[in-house]
Length: 155
Image (tube, rainbow, N blue to C red):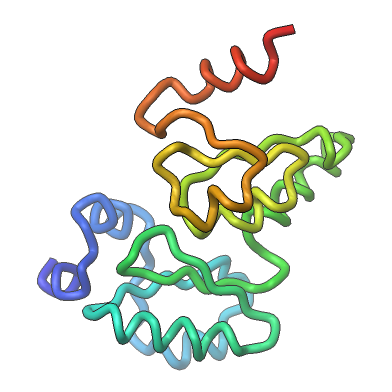
């Protein structure tokens, strides 16, 4: 807990890590040997450290960097991410990508919003995501599915 708190991981993140995290003794070795890593999600003690890491990682070929909070980064392959997952699922289900819908509220939803046929941002989403979205809907604390059904599928 002390390490997580020092790196500004909230109580919700800590619960997630305790449930799903897999501790690694030698992180450098793990990165070189990993064959099935979906994402690496480091937390930072300072905004400057996070910003510098994002710049350096974003310059790497084949790597995408996003975030769901101002304290972390999400680092994953350019072939991974929510946008490609949406397209892959649509293809498996035989759905035209133009007929897909995605809803998001954070920077890490950007790729998905761009690739969806209809990309919606939550009212409390970051400004970058709102600019990418086709429309802005209610807050994520409201009945989002009900709102979308009433406003986009009323026929």
